[in-house]
Amino acid sequence: MFKYQFFSLGLILFYLNFSSALYFHIAETERKCFIEEVPDETNVVVNYKVELYDPRTGGFMPSTPGIGMHVEVRDPDDKTILSRVYSSEGKISFTSLSPGEHVICMYSNSSAWFGGAQLRVHLDIQVGEHAINYGEVVQKEKLTELQLRIRQLLDQVEQITKEQNYQRYREDRFRQTSESTNSRVLWWSVTQTAVLVVMGAWQMRHLKSFFEAKKLV
Image (cartoon, rainbow, N blue to C red; front, top):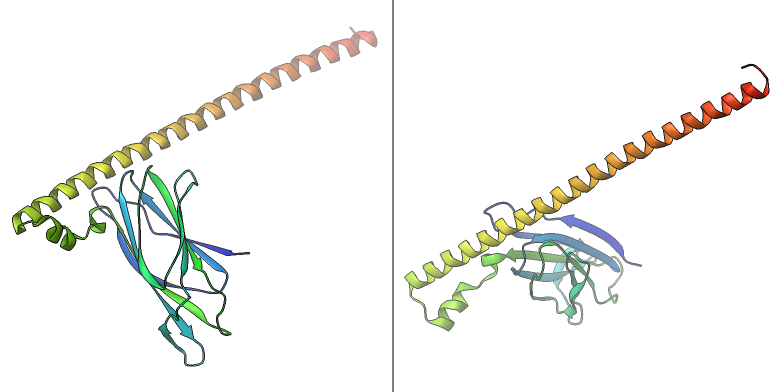
């Protein structure tokens, strides 16, 4: 069975696009997952590089052929939108179809490691316009420096709009949750009061019957 570890990479801030670079160690049969909050229709690019730790030398070396990473991405509805095996170095990209938490899970596709070995995975996650390679855009569309700057500004404005919509979506979800909780608390209080009234009436009737039976009243 896989051992699960979750890392929260933080919320998307208002007017701010998220980009993170980190590395982590992963052992055989270990599975590590990252939670990324992404607006809808937003590009996400994950660059990674895997290095193999050699306990005999105490250092890391380039991963040998055949050792790569199995990557799985699930959307907020827990539907798998990407699942495949990649090599020891590469780029993963996907586009979010719905806003919310996207879970990115990684684990090794091989267990043929020598004793005590583990992998070190360098990870760089880029969201929104940060995921766009403008160098390729310039070469493909033959843009001038001014046109490129305008293109970048338009992409930034589009991403800010998406993030604003996502914040409104989160606020709406939070309001619905709060209203639902308040409604449940209210009905629970009403139910408790009704039960107490019914129990009180039953006890009074029972006591009256008891006293009448004993001819005390």
